[in-house]
Image 1 (cartoon, chains in turn orange, red):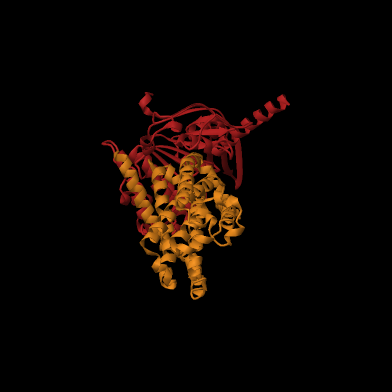
Image 2 (image 1 turned 60 degrees about the vertical axis):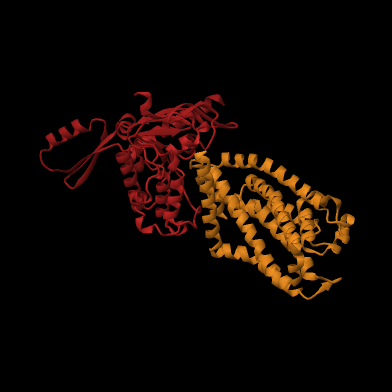
Amino acid sequence: MKTMTSVIRLGLTRGWIEFWMNALSLQGLVGLFLAPTILLALLWMFRVREVEGVSFALLMLPGFLALQLTQEGLMGVANKLAFDREDGTLLRAKALPQGMPAYLIARVVVIVLSAFVSLMLVIIPGLFIVPSLATVGVAGFVTLVWVLALGFLALAPIGAVIGAIVKSPSGAVGLSILPMGIMIAISGIFYPLKTLPVISEIFPVYWIGLGLRSALLPEMAAAVEIGGTWRPLETALVLAAWAAAGLLLAPGFLRRMARRASGSEMEAGRRRYTQS
Amino acid sequence: MSKTDTAIQVTGLQMRYGDLVVLNGVDFSVRRGEVLVLLGPNGAGKTTIIEILEGFRGRSGGSASVLGSDPEHADEAWRARVGIVLQSWRDHSAWRVRKLLDHFGKYFGPYSTDERARPVGTDTLLQLVGLTDHAHKKVGELSGGMRRRLDVAIGLVGNPEVLFLDEPTVGFDPKARREFHDVIHRLADLQGTTILLSTHDLDEAEKLSDRILILAGGKIVANGSADQLRKEFSDQTEVIWTQDDQRHVHAGRDATSFARNLLAQHPEGITNLEIRHASLEDAYMTIVQTQETTRSQKEGKQA
């Protein structure tokens, strides 16, 4: 029990320190602000256009948020894990007593904080650019929060599995960008819904997009969705199922990754890096 | 040697990857407080042995025990008693030196005992490895030599009873190497830390070791102090002298009597007399070459 609390405290401390180190570094700042800045610029350009009485910028926003979340949850997680393995961060954690659980807690802290901040960087300025966003009300914001949280839980374990099985960070990008691209392409977050293949309803990104639209768009916009409703129950169930499956599956992959981490693997990474 | 005096015990250690045999029945033990150096050509299996003993790698057969536990199944309390010097190159580069040592030290606090206080204070560590003046720097800003000294400090933060170092001085300049050797000597003398270190630098092995194991072809082919190995495997001695501005060399096993006769025959005119024993390098070459010849002979017979 005593070690348990000490592990949690170490993990939280480590995560907090690393979040700020990253956030305050040049690379971290660029990474954190680049995507939100582009998205906000797009919102700004379309702020006065309207489609059937609804602000075009508001229509774009759920797609942007879904994109941000997918990027952070899937590629961000996969990439970070692959990097930590290649540069020996993971191995150092393994060499410490209780280092591995503390490392994983710290990673969760960093990933959740980064995702939260990057979403806030879109949502908060968005309130000013898209005035109708402020009219979504309390219920809308509650929906926004649970869809983002559940959506993140559905995506991050997939990212963790990808990060655990690839050989190198470039492999992580390669392996996560493909499913990510496909899921986004067929998710309906940017394309007209009528042409969607049915298969898109299997993947979490479609439901994240739907949930976010239900949170932010006026009630009448549901008319163009499949079945003409927001299907909040189905959204919650599908995302929860993905989250549950991921959280059951990911620890095994992470354990395998931890078990295999060794000095020779890191040395191979170094050689790959210095030769390329 | 009683059981509690043994820090590391390895018996019949085997490691195979498919058909490739990396370790083929390795036996050795290390006393508490001993500095044991693993020496051998690249690919001899040094890293594999160390990784098995660190608990970072499974084995194909045989038994291994470090501080009384099998590293493959050891718990976190065991982990706290073992120090590992990893070679950093990019990890934790945004952390500042002092903060990183402080943070890593906290993992060992719950495992502190009356006999061995954990962790070692950050200031003590910084002083030990000579990084006090660089404590505020980011890890990524350190030079290669300083970085390696930080690696040693991290390996020591838990006041380990056994310390593993896999080729710790690769890429060191002579000054950094000397400083590193001083640190290892201090550790072994002051704290009684058991040290297992691999290298392919013979000079380093000779300077640091209480005992040397030479590994070749997945087996231990020699085991002894640098002196013993020299005597056992290369009994050639060179007698060198100058006579009438002419340099002479005599190689043989009878250096002392040869020199006595030489001086008796030429009471004057002999200068710069020097008797040079075989170096560890000579012994090493003999051992490794013998091993390689017997192996290729065996393979020849089989073919």
